[in-house]
Amino acid sequence: MSKPNTVIPFFQTEVTIFGAANSLADMLSVIREKEFSQFPIYEGNTFRGLITEHGITNWMAKHVDEDIIQFSDTRLYDILPHIGEVGNYQFIGRNESIYIAEEKFKESIKQGTRLDAILITHSGKSNEKLLGIITTWDIINIPKKATRLERKLIT
Image (cartoon, rainbow, N blue to C red; front, side, top):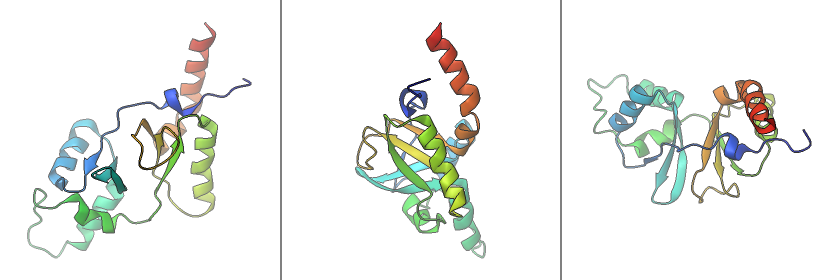
């Protein structure tokens, strides 16, 4: 193909986000219900970070000596300092190729870092509305999904 698929509409989806003041119990309910594992966190319109199952586990490990952890009393801003690697996410513009997104994941591995998600906005800026999210699982499935989409476009 002379023009590769772009990340939007390929990965366009309603992204589940949380406010920094939401409780960990709120997030765990969504994890149980939808089986999502990456959540962008905002304070007002300002992006604060990406909490993953890895970040939650880090936070819990640091509180293992406490008798009782109250998930409903724990705010996501309490977990943000424990998310592990800073930069476990990148923003990308809606018109980038799906293969550029794939390369970003590969590059993070080469640099010895962990990229958990790519967040898609109109022009790749963190203060814009989220249009989609790309996870490592999505990257693994690109060839299969791209082939189906390309087939649809041809017919």
